[in-house]
Amino acid sequence: MIILKGPSGSGKTTLLTLMGGLRSAQSGGLQVFGEELVGAKKNKLVKTRKNIGYIFQAHNLLASLTAKQNVQMSLELHDGIKAAEIEQRAIALLEAVGLGDHINYHPHSLSGGQKQRVAIARALVSHPKMVLADEPTAALDSKSGRDVVELMQQLAREQGCTILIVTHDNRILDVADRIVELEDGKITLDTKH
Amino acid sequence: MKTPLSWLQLSHEKSRLLIALAGIGFADMLMFIQLGFKAALFDSSVTFHKALRGDIFLMSPQSDALGFTKTFSERRLYESLAVEQVESVVPIYLNFGSWKNPVKQNNKTTTRTILTIAFNPAKNSLNFPGVAENIDQLKLPDVYLFDDKSRAEFGPIPDLVKQNGTVKTEVDSRQISVRGLFSMGASFAADGNILTSDTNFLRLFSERKKGLIDVGIINLKPGADLASVKATLKSKLPQDVDVFDKEEFMQKEISYWQNATAIGFIFTLGTAIGFVVGIVIVYQILYTDVANHLPEYATLKAMGYKDSYFVILVFQEAIILAVLGFLPGYLLATGLYSLAAGATALPLSMTASRATTVLILTIIMCCASGTVAVKKLSAADPADIF
Image (cartoon, rainbow over all chains, first blue to last red; front, side):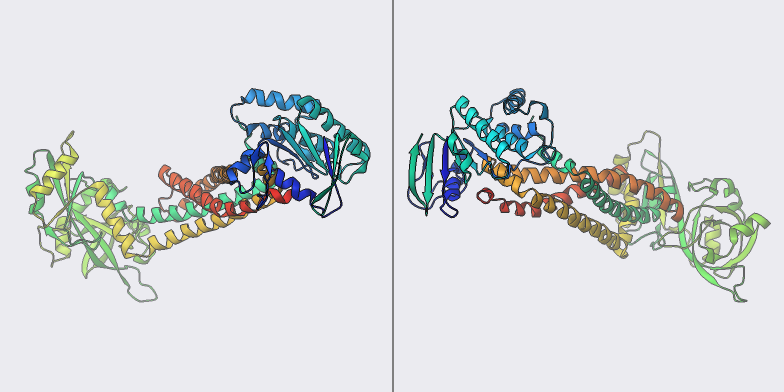
């Protein structure tokens, strides 16, 4: 669990989008999962994205889909998983985030914290190698923000995946295994806990 | 099975879906009405052709349409009797005459052009109501049947015949008497029709020569092969007659009116307008749909969904809208057809081929809108959502 912090304009989000293959880097070197992403073709970027889970500040769930369908969308992207297994895994993960009795709710009838938990389930259900989270607690009160981060920590341990959180929220710094501080595009501090 | 996102997205907002379907249904109804009236008008031009009892028809190659025929020798008809499978032949005479309205309008005598149809009354060759019942009258000199669906300008002949049994008037200044009615209806060519025997016809139009006819009917023996007899006649008969089966005979008439009048153009234009209205409506719906879902699509792109997934999504939505919007349009048009058929006496009804045409047009319409709406997809950039 890595927390990336730094003042506004320090380049945190740019770094996140480059790592996630959402922008293509023009020069220098950028290796993700051992693959060079500088000058990479669109297809390679899309392939990289499939190995990454995303959690956004605004949950970005699909409004027309239920919690379960939202989570399934992430699994349907991967070939060779049977429909029954997709459903089973989606339900299992929603239960893991404590939404076992909300699987058929649409986002508009869920609270902010519940929506963010669906987003976590969506990001982790396909067992990504890395999860990128952008200000996941910014829209939540301190209690639900805390719950969400602890949930991410717990699931990351279980699945053995890296979670990178970009945040301003000092209340959650203690969950990090490593804190990286960024200023003007340069790393100014890198501490391990 | 993958999550049917296209359907879930469309059905998520019920009221917008209903408005969309109403719009597409309206565009479909417009197309149905235009195509329906076009077909009905052309159909009405062949009511005479349909009523003729026969399998094969001969006409001069110089003839254009009913009422605009060039004569040919009836010998061609008798030559065809030599073909083994031909059972009988009937010569038909057609000509326009000047009908005098027997009732004076404002103390003035009015005349109007009327189509005179004639054949040998020994055998009924015309399937119109009233012909069979009155055909024996036509054996008398200068006796005619009047088409009770002729336009009112010819005078209140149907009422007079029902009251008095006989109406006396003049055609081309010759005294004639109407002793019965039949039902045919006005066409493009003629506002009114009268029916008589070949003998009376030649008395009336003294310039017409016996043996020079307008249409020749050929009846085949039961079980005869129509296509082969037609081919035989085509090769045997000289080039001064055309040989048609009934379908071709009607098609010749329809294509004449299609080319000679603006009817085809007007209704095709009306159909095109319905089509364009539909494109605009569907485009509006699909564009709004894509625009509203841009952040969601960007999220899916970040997760690894390819651009092609969204193109397919938009076209799936287009086709769902096309099929669902077609149904209310179809039902509405069927209802309007029966209303309009009652009001105009035109042969207007829903046909499977027209329904198929409109359904295909609707799908093309929706896919055309989809093609334009797809362009908006490129605005979904996953780098923008952080």
